Structures are given as structure tokens and as C-alpha cells.
Length: 210
Image 1 (cartoon, rainbow, N blue to C red):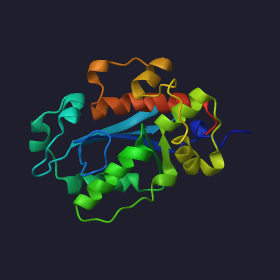
Image 2: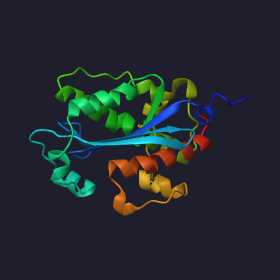
Image 3: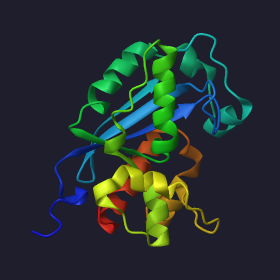
Image 4: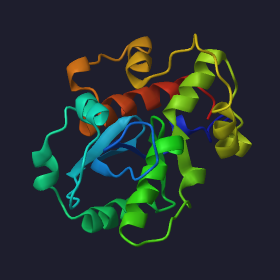
């Protein structure tokens, strides 16, 4: 069948993930305090995981604390970052899964590498060819730009250079535009964001030829 290789028809699982971090829109010494992800298949959420990470001497920036409604107890009572990373990478580095999320290609994947560096590990960017960034897909969808399926990673990074201030593609905006209910009081919590993001992802996959 023509189009049977599209992701919306595939049985392959997609991990939708989100990091909440100590700083906003910067890669300088920016560690995650929350790491949440959902394993999805054909639009269904099969399982979710939510972790708070315990970093010694962790300090939040005022802006990030306000946006995420940060509580110090999350870090004080958090989990060992090395153990959480091992659990995460057991699935995330497996070629059996795609990875997806809003701004993950340009932000969350970089935060992941800072996490590795903080633990004395070398960066590992091997996941990038399997990444779907719903922010970049949203921009292409709204601008009527057809995905380059043969060069999907390069095409997504090319989308970062295309800008139109009239095009709004935040996760909340995209959810509303696609008919997905959003509770704004719960946004910027990693676990809630992946729930919304998973719904946005599968709506886009059904609207775009990927």
C-alpha cells in the first residue's frame, strides 16, 4: 500500500520526553531537575515515567522556578541522577525507538548531554537521527512546508532557520489549534507536558507525510 511506511502506520514505538531545568533557554550549566517520558505506539500511551533528580548544591534561576512552580523538596528527595540516566538510556539509546518532544532537537537533547557531562561521561548524540521535534514539525505544518523524509534530521534543523513571527507553535498553542484540551495551570510540569505532547505528536503524524 502506498504510504504504508509512514510513521502513523508503523508499529514502532515513540518515546515522548520532556526536561524541566534549572535555567531558561540556555545551555550554560543547565541541569534537569525533572525528566519525564512516555512510551507510545500508534497514538496510545503504553507507559509513563517521571523522575526528580537529586543534584548536590542545585540552584534554580528565579525565572525557571517561577515558570515550573519549582519546589526544593523535589530535588532534596530526588533520585540518583546516574541511576535515572541508566534507566532512561536503556530505552532512549535503543534503535528500536523513535524519540519525540517539543524543542527536543535544540534543547532537551543538549540538556541530556550536560547531564552526562556532569556525571563524567562523554556526549552521545547517536539518537539524533531518530528524533522528531514537534516544535519544528508544527512550524512546517503551519507554514505548509513538506517534510523531507529522506533527510528528516537535516530538514528539521533547516526548519530552525525559518522564522515567521506570526506563526505560533508553542506546545499549548498547538494543542489548542489541534483540538486537544489543555489545563494551563498544569503546564510546565514534565509529566503533564508529555501527555499533551504525545497527543500533539500523533495529531501531526496523521496530518503530515512522515
